[in-house]
Length: 386
Image 1: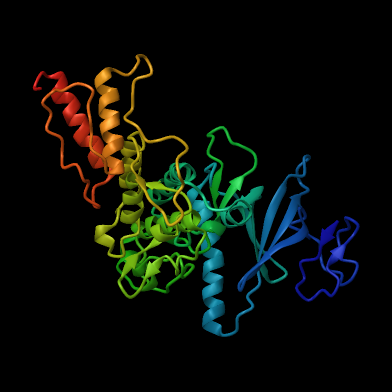
Image 2 (image 1 turned 180 degrees about the vertical axis):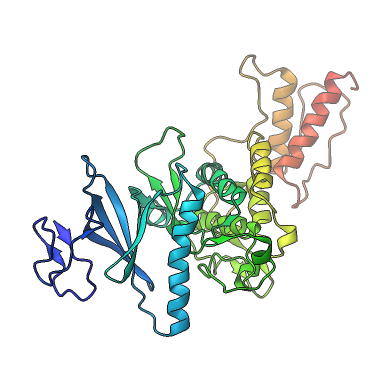
């Protein structure tokens, strides 16, 4: 089966693998080797096709991107040409990376530009979100650990992606040797971060819901990609449009209100810093995000209560070593903690002359504060202060 690439062909589908279209007579093979099989996408500036490389014995699948601008106006078309050429240049500059589609060819045929790149088999994260629902904290941490090194790779080569969003992140169905199966695609908006470029106001490119404020003004920086990835994360956590997650009247993100599962304060803090609207308050580099993520992910998370909190099946308790049974003081402290949370009066089985904290907990007291106070009591007990 072949698909004619002539935009004006009335019947582009060809059942047989011929070299010329049976309807319009156009060539069906690009560069005498790439055969389009079916269309898989179309935008304002081009069309995308699933294809096969017939020059190789295994006939591997690939992707054909055809430059075919729908917009009118000389300046618009000129910008489209620039973006199409820019994608080929950026993919070529980045070389080979297991989480970036490989550029296979870039050429002009029949007065139309074509880009051939590696086919990534799998769903993008927007499709995955629609099918499986909102992500949880574990999935977001995995996403960040998978994608941040890709951005690190791009930024080290002075390339800013500028269009990070769920649609441009594909989860590869076949696991690579790196065990990182998320692939960053669509480098059409990517820009070289030269000193001149960073200090020149240009055209705003990217998806409005995910674009950093400075990028809207045409001054994208490395931290702009960090911002877009942060917006992607809160969208995946809430399954709500980023426009709904930002209170424009109070200039504040309100994504916590729409959580369907708890997120720890540690991860919340990281996401909040990624989402800072003022660039200097945001993470400046991917390295900074990775450092905080790796330092904090091993700590016991403190849950942030969402609008639809998940009720734990077992009560939260003070961690006890699996190698030994809880001591008597641990049991007594646990009873004190339970009574504090329920607003009761702690009654220890033994009198240790312990003056308890105020017996009616304040509404602002959190479980973590009680845990800290009980731990302090336990330490003082063991040190013989009672």
